[in-house]
Each structure stands twice: as structure tokens, then as C-alpha cells.
Image (cartoon, rainbow over all chains, first blue to last red; front, side):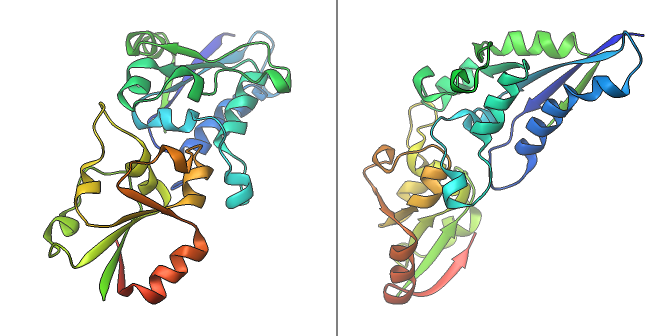
Length: 137
Length: 98
């Protein structure tokens, strides 16, 4: 009987492959796994974007109009809606010349209570160290 | 007629691209290649943009990723699907996909 912390780390870009989308769907699915577990057991997910993975977090993605697929933006907002801790590496956001206003920081229109956090890589490293399992996407 | 070189990854260089004869080809950035057009890594434009006299980026792939056509480097011309078809039929004798 325990809580297992799982870190979902995304370092791949969106759309060319399904990899980063899998991270989002797996992280969101982990929030519903409780119904299959015994009392007192649960999964605590944390989702972090590092390296080129931060490019998943750009606002105003129009992939649904162009490709007919759900956007990574909508998946990230759904993650926030399901109270998943979303961390975005601030060094990598800066490296790619991006600013906070270009990044998905909240899902207020969906009614999410929490926001994404721009954090140093050291914070993400600490999350990985304190996790029971780390999954890289 | 020139060769149309389609680049679909966000890379700093490509061995084949480096070996092609200068002036014989134009680069078309598609899929994740469009990040080369709009993202300045560590403040520097992608080296790929200096490989060809003309560099195009596909607008549909830009906006899908949350990038506005107005964000692209001044060296890059933004084309849509229709424009790309025109390029393939009118400007490029052959196309290759890297």
C-alpha cells in the first residue's frame, strides 16, 4: 500500500512522431488508474518538458485544423485540468528564444486550478530523483 | 531547374545538404524542419538557413506548431500547400527528402 511517484519526461518535439503525445496520454491515464488499485495505493504523476520537448508547450497550435489531430496544447491543458504537475525547463525555453507569454502556462478556460511552472533544470532533476519510476519520451 | 530539398527535422546540419553543389538547390522546410525557420537557438538563426540561396517554410506546418509565419527568419519565404505545389511543378526539376 503506497503512493508511487512517476516522472514523465518529454525531450522530443511534437507531431513528427507520436512520442510526446504518448507521454501526455500516459500521464493523464495515470490519474485514472486509482480505480484499479487497492485502497491506499495510487500514482502521483509529474510531467516535465526539457530540451527540444519544450517546443510541445507553444501556444496557439493549429494542428487540429491542419492535420485533423488533437493538439499537444490541448493535451497539456487536459493534464493541468486533471491536476498533473507540469514543469517546463526555463533554461531550455530561453535557449530556444521563447518567452513565458508564448508558453502554455494555464488551462483557465477549461477550469483548471493549477498552472504550468517554468523551473530550472535542477528542479526537474530533483523531481526525477524523488520519483519511483522515470519514463522518457 | 533546381532540386527541391525537403528537410523535415530540426537539425543544425545534414551531411547530404552539406555536399550538394551550392546554387543547385533550394531548401523547403516542412514538418519539424519548420523550427529551423522560426527558432533561434541560443540567439542564433539555424545554420541550415545559410545552406541555400532560397529557403521556404510550409505555413501549415508552422501554424500547427504554434509558430506564426511572421516569426520566421527574414531569409525564409513562407508558402502554403498550394504554393508548394507550384514550386514543385514550376521551379524544381527534382525533389529529394532529407
